[in-house]
Amino acid sequence: MSEVGTDDIGSWFSPEELAVIRRRLPILYVDVVPVRVDADGAITAIGTLLRTPRKGGIQRALVSGRVMYHERIRDALARHLDKDLGPMALPRIPVSPVPFTVAEYFPTPGITAYHDPRQHAVSLAYIVPVEGDCQPQQDALDIAWFTPEQIIEPEVLGEMVDGHAALIRTALAVSGRLT
View 1 (cartoon, rainbow, N blue to C red):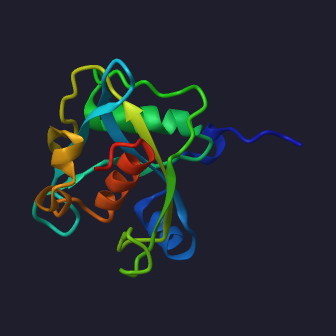
View 2 (view 1 turned 90 degrees about the horizontal axis):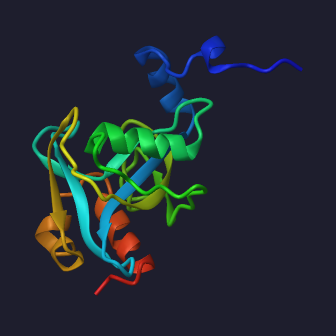
């Protein structure tokens, strides 16, 4: 049996191919809740990206994106953290990352807390501490850090896109920081 390399098949689809695939198959994503932690490992701040979402306006989002063909989950996490927070974010990604939850996004609102009008997507969600200086990259307008108490305020959670507020609440709950 011959091995197939990523150069033979390619890691990305054309926009037309991706549109067809999105209508037929769930796509694998990663969602990342970037955090700052104290010396004991307790979450002291949660980072959100200020973006202009697909439907317009300005909303807050987490680091998120597709896993490419032949890409390890850890590498996808590193790639998206670097793409969204910048090369100096200095994330501490575990050698063997374990998601804190699995989020299933549907194109039909209301099936789960997660919604993506483009597709059915399955996302592995991670809490990743970052230690460095984060700078907005690509389509992010800004990066804001909130304490666990601030981020669960209704007006902040109300600014989140596509169910990311539910991911933040779950991340705080599993880390013992939901008050």
